[in-house]
Length: 182
Image (cartoon, rainbow, N blue to C red; front, side, top):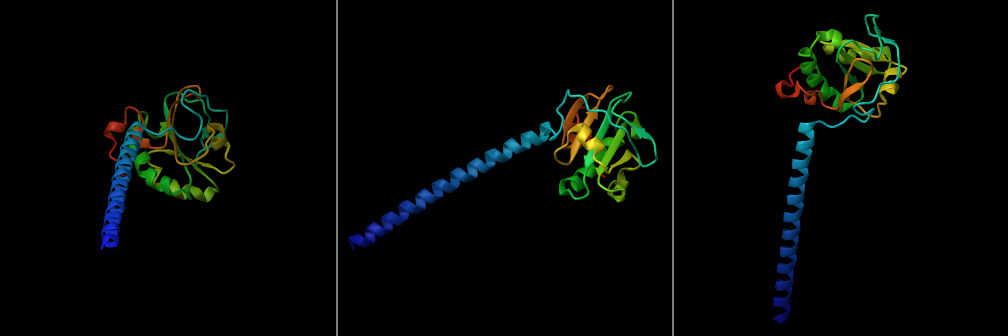
């Protein structure tokens, strides 16, 4: 009988320990979720050149043959996407919503896709709100120091980055009114 009592007490203690451990793990997950939500609201920097850096010189052409350089007359929204990136597929709609309201219209918005010329199809829905650039030799990707996709930038006058991130709806000044539709 005393062995049975010992087994019941030991089992109860083990269950209490597991329950306490489970509660601790759930609390930690909730805390991590809150931290990630806060980071999402503030915008995550792109894995590329940081804000304040100057983009290296490059010369490419958009799909209509117009030249593109890092020297721009006004703030320009630049988004880098890869057709093989699942996050890029989700981010296109956000980028399109922000680009549609960008000051200066589509002349001040660049949507860049890396890979062969056929990759331009990946961004065709952005054509009404952005100039599309295919970057087959990665000249722009290297100039911006991009290590992962998506990457979103606000390029100021002389090629200086005034903002970097991975979510277009976190771009300062436009984030609060972004609908995410696209």
